[in-house]
Image 1 (cartoon, protein in one colour):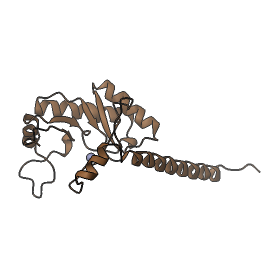
Image 2 (cartoon, protein in one colour; image 1 turned 60 degrees about the vertical axis):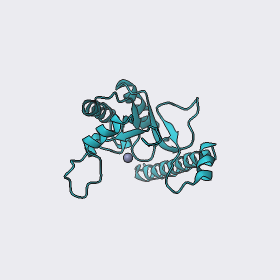
Image 3 (cartoon, protein in one colour; image 1 turned 90 degrees about the vertical axis):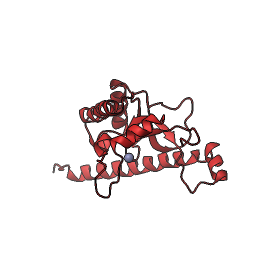
Length: 185
Ligand SMILES: [Zn+2]
C-alpha cells in the first residue's frame, strides 16, 4: 500500500497485542502498529479485548471503548477516532446498538464500521458504516462490480436473515415463557 501511496485504517484491539518473541505469534506487536502509523495508516479501535458487545452492560461497553482509545493513543501518539465492531453487527439488538453509539459519542469517537456488507452513503449512520469485503480472489471485474454497488443487496439479505432469526428466537422465548407460567386451576 505504501508503494502505491495508499493509506488505510488499522483497527487494533490493544488487549491482543503480542510481544515479538511470542511463539507462533498471531497478532501485531506495538512496534508494528507504530510502524504502520508512521507510514500514514490511521489507527482505530477494535475494542480492548474483542468481546461480544451484545453480552456487555453499558458500563462495560464504555470501558472497552474508552480504555482501548486511551492505550492506542498512548502507544502510537496518534488520535484515535474510528471504531470497528467486533464479530457480526447485531443490528436488531437495538439496546446494544444504542449503548454503543452513546458510548462512542461519550468517548470522543467520530465514526465506526460494521460487518454489514454494502456501500456507505451520505445518509448512512457515521457510527455504523457498512463495508465491502475485498480479498485476493477479486479480479479487476469483480472489484469494479463491488465498487459500483453490485454487492449492496447482500446487506439487505443479511438484515432480513437477522430479522427472521430474531423473530424465531423471540417467538420461541414467548412459547417457553408461556409453558413456564403456572396456570391457575
Ligand atoms: Zn475482529
